[in-house]
Length: 169
Image 1 (cartoon, rainbow, N blue to C red):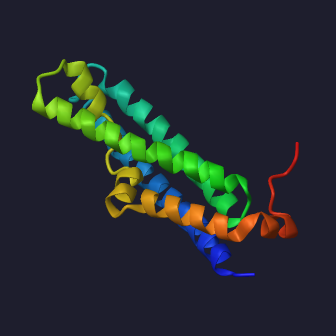
Image 2 (image 1 turned 30 degrees about the horizontal axis):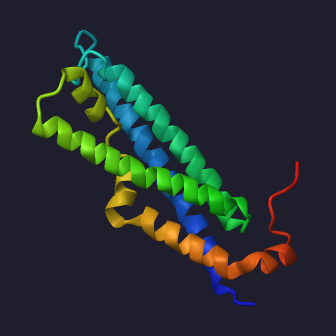
Image 3 (image 1 turned 90 degrees about the vertical axis):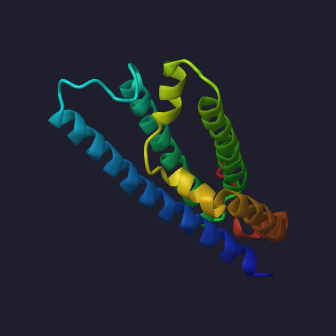
């Protein structure tokens, strides 16, 4: 049996865990900077618009949920569990679609006059998000393709021999 699919999957799982750790540090720094700004300027409104604060915390919650899912997916893929395949497909497909939607939204705000609440909604995402760094280097595309190829080469027979199926409820 070939061992390269296992190595690739374990490497992708480990990289996912590293991205999740980097994202948690980045998100924590962003929250810290925002909290210090508002603590030192208590009378100031949010410069991003009337609902910028709520939208920022919504972005923080979404980023935290993404990091939690990235951690779970990383563990499942590193353990060579079958649910790692479909969860990787779902997570990275969502991430790729999200980039195109955000790109279209940024373009729409810049190119045409839109209401301030729409502009503040778009710019209120957490700064320094690990998702943007991943997209710049193409990690979601690479991981999605490599995971699918490795799982297909690993095969159902190898998965059955090693007991790598998802646990039954």
